[in-house]
Each structure stands twice: as structure tokens, then as C-alpha cells.
Image (cartoon, rainbow, N blue to C red; front, side, top):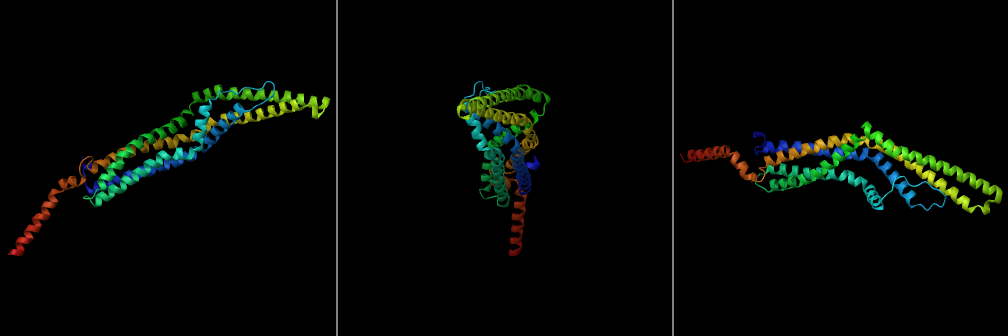
Length: 290
């Protein structure tokens, strides 16, 4: 193809387009990070309150069980991801951006000086970028699927039935237990005095703690599904930009002669120009002699 033929003009054009796509990828990564703040907060709220409910030592009589059996390993992994959230969200897009920028820089250097090793360096970073592109594409696809999937009515119905409804039932039960514990503590204080009602007071405190944590857990669980919707736009655009950048980097690599020598390709593609120069020089020499 003529547009992929090794030449200074083609290298410059493909490099510029690759740089533009890299900038779009970085912008999508930053946008995804900003859009995920609400999703992160809701997730952290859910994990924190579930962990507190699971690990709490409540002494009250019939405390409501945690609605989900949470594996400690899952909790630890999820907590670690939350701690590194900003880096996890920005790293794939930023890494691909940096690699493409370096590749573009050396391709431009190669266009200015075809005899130096810049073309080899550029192609090496383009090759490395293909592996990073896979990770970046997977990241943006996860964001897109998560954001789009949560907007499907079937998903909302499933979430309400399996998460919100059981959670709200637990809140109702916790409220009932708090009311019973409160009434029992008040009766105990009225009949026997505060100093003789330590158990009743402890049960009331446990019931109040459980009610607070369940209320927070359910409010965060109700909002979690909707907090992930903003991830759809940067996910879709980022995935398309990653595919475009991958294609454009291939084009840049082709203009640098791919696995062959860029210097040799440039000399092969512009032999006529060199011959004309040699012919003109020889003719001038002959005129000088005469």
C-alpha cells in the first residue's frame, strides 16, 4: 500500500495519528477514574460494613445474620484493590500512552535521520505496546460492560430481588430487634436500676450497632448499581481508541519497514533521486574538465 510505504512523510503522518489516539486513551483513563469515584465509595462502604458485621462480637440474643457469607480471602483481595484503586484505574491507559509516545518520538527521529537506530527503538516499543494494548483493551471493556450491563432492566430487577430486598428485610428485622432491646432495657432500668442492667444495656448497644451497620450497608448496596453507570462512556470510547491506536501503531511500524531495515527501505524507495543527484554531479564534473 502506498500510504504504508516507508517515507518521511508517511512516517510523520502515521506517527501523528498514533499520538492523537494515545492522547484519547489517556483522556479516557482519566475520565474513567473520575467516573469511578462514586462506584469506589459504594463498594468500600459495602465491604466495610459487611466486614464489621461479620467480625463483630455482638452479645445480643437473636441478632440478624449477615445476609451474605463473605469469604475472608475475597474480602482481603477486594480491600487491596480498593486501596490501590487510583493506580489500578489509571495504570493500563497511562502505560499504553507512555509506550506510544516513546514509539512516536523515535519514529519521528527516524524520519529525520533514517541512518540512525531510532527506527529500531520505535519498532521495539510498538511491539511492546501490543501486549499492553491487550491489557488496556480488557480494562476498558470491563468498564464498558459494567456500565452498560447495570442499565439493563433485567439486571436492575435481579439486583433488587437478590440484594436490595433481602437487605431491606434485614433492616426491618434489625429495627424490630432494636425496639425489643430498647423496651427490655428501659423495663430493666425502671425495675432494678441502671447498675443492675448491664446485660440489657449491652444488648441494646449491640442492636443499635447492628441496625446502624445494616442501614449503611443497604443504602450503599442500593446505590452501587447506579454508581457504575458512568463507567460506560469512557469504557466504550477507550476500547475503540485502544483498537484504533493498535491499528495506527501497526501502520507506523509498516512505514518503518516492519521487520526490515528502515534505512535500506528508504534507499530502495528513493533510488531515482539518488541517481539523479549522481548524474547531475557527474555532468558538472565533466563540464568542469572541459
